Length: 163
Image 1: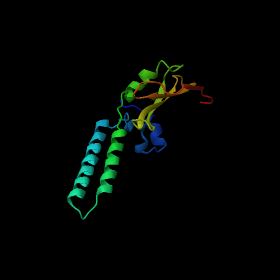
Image 2: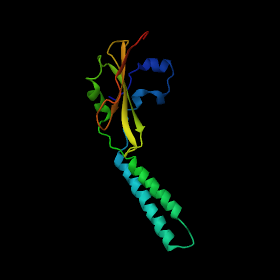
Image 3: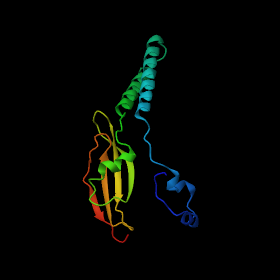
């Protein structure tokens, strides 16, 4: 079974919900393999070297600016390379003991925090957790670092009124 919200099929048809909004049609979000980004680093680095060599051999064209821009782009691609340790399926396991109520429903989203450190992007899972009651009575929001496995924000919990 795929992740998603289970909605009665009759209700979907009665409300004329389009197929592309069906949450069951899409499974867990998969972050592209960070190793693929390394290919772009190599491509831009090779193009930079070719531009530099071509500028040295041919005096009628100056590709030094292009070589510098491509080299800068290659370095940038290397610096945004990141490694994701925790997958979406493992997030709830890591935060379950930090939530002050039962876990019924939850929604998980991956975002990237940008900083001027060695690696520019830091993957962060943002999780909204509802308790098991129907309708839910409590909701918590947590941000979880995908690399260090640390909770990076205080667990925000509130009562749901008029659910």
